[in-house]
Image (cartoon, rainbow, N blue to C red; front, side, top):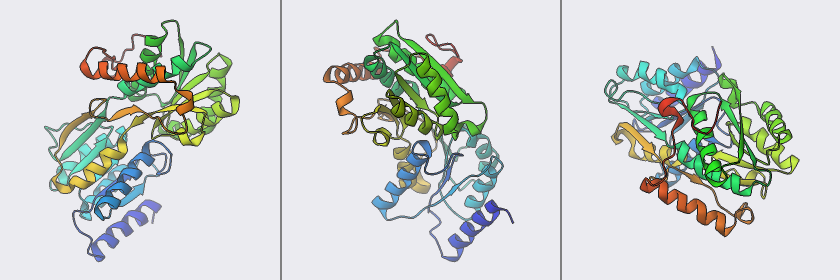
Length: 334
């Protein structure tokens, strides 16, 4: 019996034999692991917040391969968990294949998209990553002494280019002459969990003059942040607040409130509203992190400039181009 069959089989058996409430939610993490200190861990934190606030319970599982996505969805649905919350764009197709077979189960895809007209029991939660990335791009450019900032992405997909393009727009809004160096780690899901490659890319960008590097690469980004700290330059974290990983060395983190999305979906339970949600600056779905670990790095003038830009983006006075809207970026070539 495979690891996954044993794990999910036991999940189903435990749920049913213990008389678990049919409305208990389940959470399926994307590849890269629950404790990646970034995207997946934000989802875990949201689930834990749900449990702490409500006293409710949930089941979760870490995928080991692409082939396990659909099996995980079916096992949880058959065991009566509702909603079944998933992370990562790669869950879109498996959910689309499964949802119709379980019309009474609500499925949630965070970062993915499933046509609500075809699958009315699915909630797709998307984020305006370009807006949050614009703000940290501004901060990076204002902190840079070399006028060169870097970006290390994980898997080369439109979503990650969306981060990079927003970041470059923010940097150039502050300094039109700023150079933005962008590299992706790879073209397969392994790109999310390769801190050694992240370190290598960071060193290459540092050799080209970058003194602030934004990592949007899951577990790979941990290698970027570590190398930046070791080499005496600044880094920018992503998704979760990663400032604490290297206090005084992480300039800020681009927050993507996956935790809030997961907590709300689990709290709403089987009554959650399906369709499509987009969480941007206005909805506080994205932003930047400021805490005791980085306050010395961000001056009052920097904060004022970024907060003003935030309000202008919300008001529509600043338009941040979304790479995923047309697969182009006006200020960065990939």
